[in-house]
Image 1 (spheres, rainbow, N blue to C red):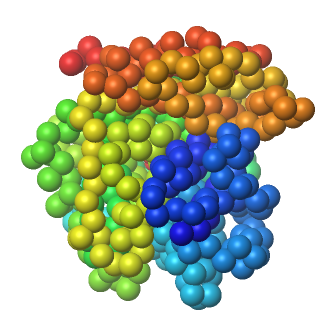
Image 2: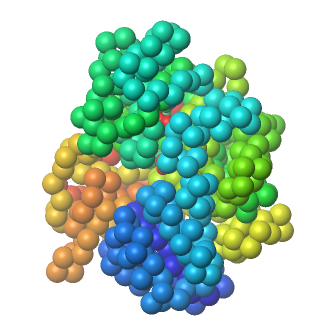
Length: 424
Ligand code: AMP
Ligand code: GLY
């Protein structure tokens, strides 16, 4: 098979790595890819925000399967267009991807299908939003309706903060684009789990659970990012809890989408808060998580491509996912300044030495190649990943490898997985 992966981050590097390892593959392509992905796949320049460009690449290459990584092309309807042209594609249609691309849609959908989530209100004007505020205790969470790369969620301790968040989102000051709807939500407390599942539109198969670290600072402080590190262990969720989540959240969501004539094929990522009242959905994503995917795939012990194909062909119930026991971890090395503004083009050294740490794989999130040297090209730059018998061992390998890597302004959190280690 010739497989085309859309995207150019660490998640796509991990996907390409797993897909390239399949016996069924003859060639892997990636559009646009990055300098790390180029070691494994032929990279084709393309813009992820330009569906016509991606369609042009697909028409020129005639892949047997397209796997869409990021949310933007999903929300722009790339899958619908490929399906119309008879191309096999892994990912949800634009309508199904609304579970991620519109928080108001997702909240109303969960309410229709009795999926546990925080109490909420949707507002379409500042006045309506301020009136709805009376229904909530503080702290309260204000969310932009549309895609915002993790920047559209504001936790507010006071009414004043909430009112500023509402006007900032609705005027366009906060995100650069005007939000015609916002969601106001009850504040939940507990531990967060990323529960990713695969679906063929009818059946659901859970992936190994993971935990992300969204804040930039150690001890979960500072602004939210796309994710600074993730880990996965065999003991994060017991079988009973996994089955509860599957049957009260993921299966009703997939059945609900099918009942509403938008069958969901792809990754249904359930972002959960494990509250005292039980697991509740913070958000759905319609794609693999980044950096969860790097950690999750490090534990996968069966053929990813065969399972993705089974999803596209509606026969996920025949597919089998096998997991390595033990644990895995991925720690992101970021550019100084991220998630705010940062400078790129810094030379990266020590990658070869770091790869020599046994069990370590380095996924590139934002790198380029200039005169034969890897250079930084994004906010998140590298995802250093390892799987081992225990979480402690995985983290020790990852941090040994990170010690060998350098670039100007390199920043990473030293406390990934630490809370879990304490409770272990
Ligand atoms: P989201 O993009 O909706 O997952 O939100 C990003 C992050 O904001 C989550 O990972 C949580 O850490 C936090 N968050 C979102 N919704 C809530 C909520 N209702 N209560 C507490 N924290 C939340
Ligand atoms: N790591 C969070 C996400 O992919 O949305």
